[in-house]
Image (cartoon, rainbow, N blue to C red; front, side, top):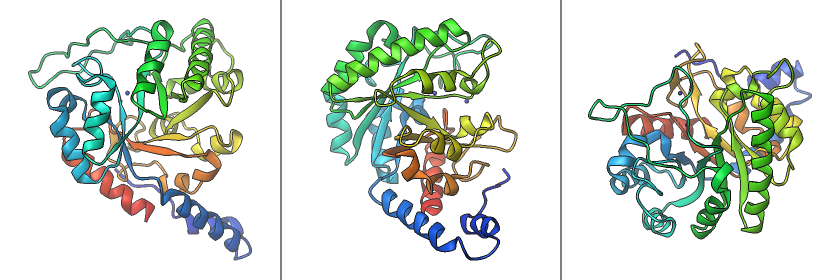
Length: 313
């Protein structure tokens, strides 16, 4: 749910760390294992990337996405209601008819409220979009779990939740635990998606992200790490993986410019994707979804895919 390239070459980093060749065999083996691990993980896309197009022509947009080469889908909210106007099983059938798999769905943690100072995005008519009533995990977690299960999804993900105060964090953690338990019973995995604000200390104490990680069951509540927002918050994804191995089965593959404010196409910003993907095994990666918030056009979606293939080559 927001060009100077500054990625470092993995072997150059390894060479500098080793100050010679002593470490190269083990590093090369780690890279090889990461490559083997990623071989069976096709590129996915978070549909918020093509938010307006999915609202106006979901079938046609999915056809374009499939043609580019994406194989997995993570859905988000839609102005059409439900799942882009479809019932869960109907949307699943549509996605699969195009040779793709619907893996995960984003849901709000609490009733929708615009952040202070923010406005709804405008549609093609130049007017603010209209958002229909949406279910949220606080009030409707069982319904959302049941919908996800009926669609055969693997993951139900909290897209965002209030974390501005200690009380809000406590409430969100309670919701996560309940949702995680319900998801497990339904054969799903629950996960939490971050923005940058989760890494800001609250009430002079720990960050919301630290509290969620430490105060939820590691098997019931996994994390979907947004690589761009983590980078904006100046958090090293690889360090997070090492601190909490296996806790990050989902990633948002998103890039951000050097100003740490402007989202850009994958491979044209400062996120160190190659280095991060080499730590996929430590993270416990299962699926990754390209995201570019409200991408300017389908061409950008294709650029992200092509650049990602080069990064992973």
